[in-house]
Length: 359
Image 1 (tube, rainbow, N blue to C red):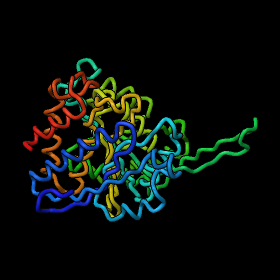
Image 2 (image 1 turned 90 degrees about the vertical axis):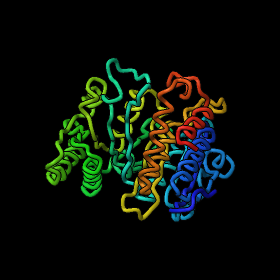
Image 3 (image 1 turned 90 degrees about the horizontal axis):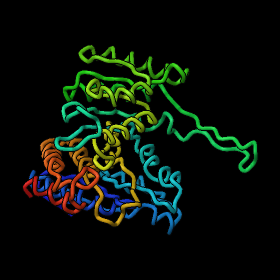
Image 4 (image 1 turned 60 degrees about the vertical axis):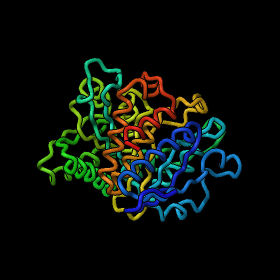
C-alpha cells in the first residue's frame, strides 16, 4: 500500500496474535491517513508471523526473518502470544531474537497521563506524570545466558546469568542523556540495586557517573529499584527521564502504564540508533486472548507506537499530529475504549483518531 507522493518509507507490519489483528488495522489506517496529509509515501508490507505459524510450522517466524526485514525502514509489530504456545517460545522466537539480531539496544517507552483519562492516583493530573523510560534492550537480565541441568531429577539446576558490559551500559546511559537534552528534559534518574547486586549494579553506577559527567546541564540521581517503584506512585512528578536495565525497565514501564490508566495505551520503540538495522515499534501490552475477537481492545498503544516510528524516521510534524489526534480521542469518553472508562469499540476509537487528523 502506498500513500502520499513525497518522502518514502518501507514499513513491515506483523499483526501478531490475539488482539493484534484488531488493533493493527487501526494503526496502519492512521499511519496512512497522516502520511497522506503530510505528503509522505508509505510502502507497508504485511507478514503473517506469530503463534499460528508456530503451530503449523514449528517456528514463530522463518529462519531468514532478519534477512527479510533488513531492507525495511521500520517494523510495526503487534503482540505475540497464545495460550497454546509457551511464552518462552514466542518471546525468544520473535521479539528478543529480533532485538538482538538488529542490535536494537534502546527500548524507549514514554509514560504520560493524558488529559481526560481517569488515572488511579489521587491528585495526579496530566502534567504530573510525564516520564520517558530508556531501557537497555539487548543484554542485562534478558541476555539469554544460562541453562538447565539434570532435568526431571531432584538435583535439577537452572542458571540464569545477567550479562552487563561497560560498553552496553555506557551506550544506553549516553542515549538517555542525549534524548533528555534533545527533548528539553533536564533530569535523568538511574535505576539501580547496587546494595544487593554487588557486581553488575556497581558497574552500572560507575558507568552512569562517568557518562553523566559529560552532561553538566542535566541533573541526575540514582535510585534503588524498590524505592523507585514507590516513588513512581508517591512522587511521579519527581521523575523526568529514567534509564534502567532490561528487567528493571520492563517492570517499571508496566507500572507506569497502569498509573496512566491502562496497559492498552503504552507504546514502545526498539531502536538501533546507528540506523544500520530497522527499528521495531510495538505496544507493550500482550495479546490479551481473554478479550480477543470482541472488538473492545484499545488501539492507542499501537497507534502511539506508530507515532514513535514516524518520529524516528524524521517525520516530526506527522508524528506530532498523530499523537495530538490520539490525545484528543482519549479525552472524550465517547471515543475511548472501555479500559479507559469509555464506550468506544476498537474500530470506533481508530476512526475517531483518523477524524481528529482530518482524514
